[in-house]
Amino acid sequence: MAGTRLGREAEDVAARHLESQGWTILARNVRAGRREVDIIATKGRVLTFVEVKCRRSREYGHPLEAITAAKREEIARVARAWLRDRRLPPGTTVRFDAVSVVWPAGEPPRISHLPDAWRMG
Image (cartoon, rainbow, N blue to C red):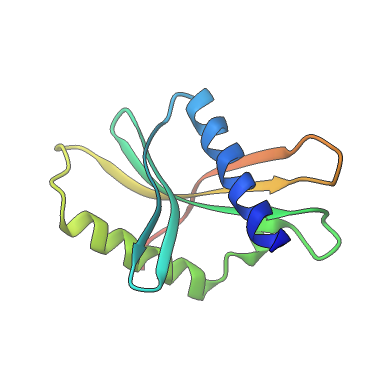
């Protein structure tokens, strides 16, 4: 399926972008039941759960518009489950980031990282 392949490729591009910015990727495609978070990364004392959204164009809106309240809650549930099994170092800040990838066919992807895109409810 082309959309699924594009999504995986966009996640790869997003992970490489984060790494180029000094982030360490701890995990990818982490699931809790049917819910999933695309990337879990750390940098210094920050641990972030990252949602990646990609579009070929902005014809149907910006990719980040697809991160609805329901999607944010799904990601928060995965985050809670992942955090339950781990002991974080004191002073660790946990946040939710978003990475948009606009990737027109035949062109290089345009990547935008939005730190602290939302808060866990």
